[in-house]
Image (cartoon, rainbow, N blue to C red):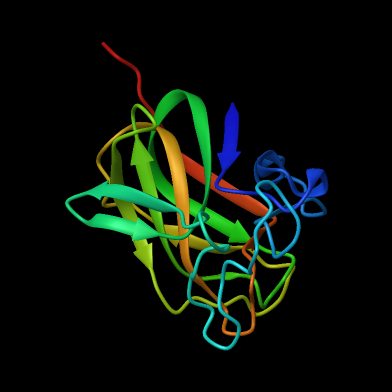
Length: 174
């Protein structure tokens, strides 16, 4: 498994922590004055939660087939085999930094991305319950999966994901 992200705030918040099945570890995007890369500003606007980039030179975009260019902090995993994603779950240790609006994307090469799901207006009622989303209409198999967070909660300024669960069917070539 290969995990990566647009940024991370320190070695205590690395991308792979979102996939390690432990709710006590977490991925957190960079914030003003620290992280990799070091941002000059917070990536999400306080009061709106909209993505604004981490300062000059730190505005992340992803081109999505049949959608266009979307912007936001992203977190991704490359699986050893293709799956057809049928459900995913998100858990955050911060209610204010929980993704409000986001895309779930799939790719076979890590370069060409396709939309699997789009969610808007999502909230986390607490930091112990995972929110699950069904993607049964997805018929395609991918090895790369990416979440692009276009907005966090209105008082959040960074993205935080404790766990990003993926469920699906494996591809077995005949």
